[in-house]
Length: 226
Image 1 (cartoon, one colour):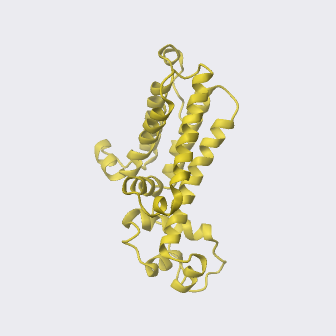
Image 2: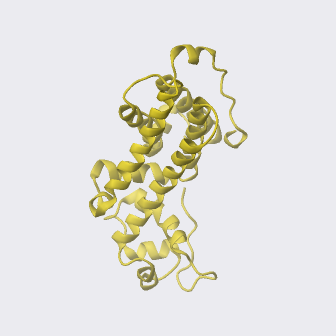
Image 3: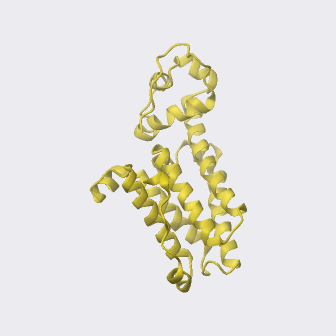
């Protein structure tokens, strides 16, 4: 989803680093780090190149901040699910809903993360690897806690975490291919609801014992996805 560009110059309100990160993310997602110039980034944000460099020392520093923000947002959802109260299957559903909603609201996030992870890009090479690893470990820890509680079937929690991450990221990262397969725009309300329900059902099938799956009621879509 393209962000509205500001006219370059002095903005009516002072821009924060978070504003710049949000505006720059779609450009980096579409064309990668090397495909975007500082001038274009400044135009996208609505400030001059010199002002942009006042906030971030380089284009690479801005890119790293974009990836760090995306990982931080998703990590926060996982932390909330791990610390939340309630039965593990319901917490699993809530986490899946929130992650799908976050990826739908910021279409560039999945593509950025997948590019970075596959290409081992600037974020990983500049020291971001441990944070990515910590996010995956946190996901595995949540799943293992559910196994220890008897709510999830016993399996390798790290392998399971990787499978669930792929289920969430890949269709959004390859949105054009996904839309072609579905025969409709992935980001239309109906397709977003269908994708959310598919993810929740598939994650349940991966995590829950067969007997639990058989007696679980069908998930009711939330209004925000209709």
